[in-house]
Length: 213
Image (cartoon, rainbow, N blue to C red; front, side, top):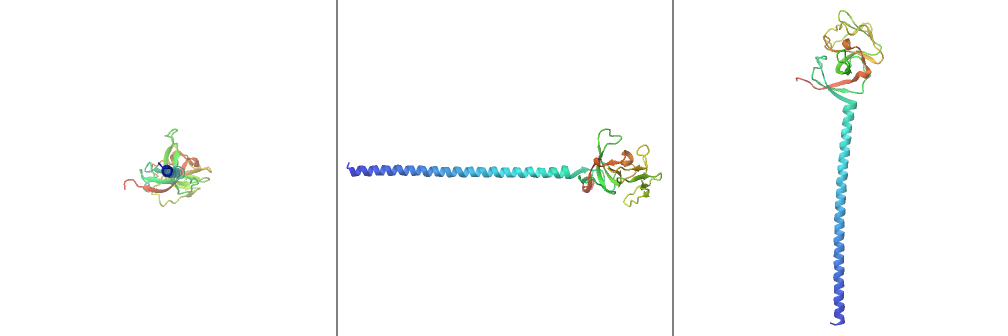
């Protein structure tokens, strides 16, 4: 073989080697690009998952704050507020309102003479607040600071419960006096005495669902 032929063969071999090297580099670049794409795709999916979990946690936190710190839901435990509230009605109340006034309907957790150390839930109407003097006369009339109370939305007289609260009652600054709208037999301050602010769970906002529609 001539020297020229040997040189051509060498050049062809070198070109072939260079081509193979370039092909391998191209394959490596392609593999690297695909790997980078997969990594970026994975990172994006992880970020999306993290964002989703963060939103879920925030949503649960907002619900917890809303329904355990600000808003509450309870069931009317008795017929003491009939006809406006009946036993089994679902009631929405505002937890942060303990500075109540007369005619407010409030949710109370209170120990009673029969409950021992356990607290019972009551939904009742405020008729007097701190500093007021409450009297219930022998003929079942409600007096606040010596004045007869006109209650156009109450359809029953207000008898005393003998053997429980003694009248007249002057309320401390942190107390209120509550009565059931159903005055004959309702469990209220005539039975368990004045309610302290610390025993007020919140003020009723509205009825969410009525029982026996």
